[in-house]
Image 1 (cartoon, rainbow, N blue to C red):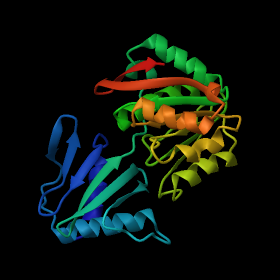
Image 2 (cartoon, rainbow, N blue to C red; image 1 turned 180 degrees about the horizontal axis):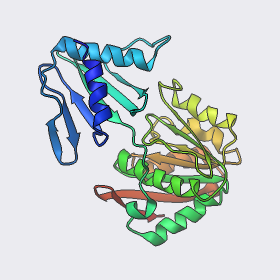
Image 3 (spheres, rainbow, N blue to C red; image 1 turned 180 degrees about the vertical axis):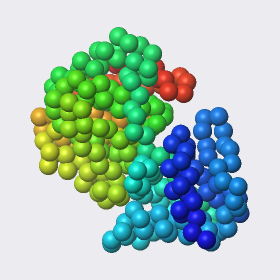
Length: 277
């Protein structure tokens, strides 16, 4: 049985369904902050799960599909339904899938940040487009992305310019408002973070956001942006001192290019506390 159509129908008719987990010998379940609940009253066999993965992968890469390993992730768009990130792994010889809807609605900055004055201060700094680096760090990649997207969307709605976004997997889909938003992600668009960062030069952006950078091994790759007339936002879930020390090593004598350092702490679902250094 082709359960891919059943899955697509489920995602299309349940717009609030943000995450679906499909495991062998169990029915699919949806997951929210409140927990898991049954999404379909059908038990998927290992062959069913494998077939769904194969067909979603084929839909994501209709031509020249990369070889699918034992684990990985990819994104695909389903017409009139939305964009989704599919993550899979192998356990005891069978596949397990996680399908996450990429949100279209970026939360408003004033609903995300507890401190309106600090949010306004950061908005003014980013809106200036003044070349330099702003560091963002916090223990939760999701909370970091939520706050930074809310901040960027505030700028997007008030300033004219080009925003370039590079992430491992897109956290949100950003619409064009006053700004042109260019978004790229690993595997779907580029094979390495270094390539994605280099592609920023193709658009000469006013703002470049590099999301979830690994401070231990990838900071040097974004050094090419530091000599360009662009405001670069960098986020990492590494500790603040790790990110700061690595960036300082890349900047050398140009430490003044660090405009601000922002720590982000999730306090509850959909809200963060920020601190400026």
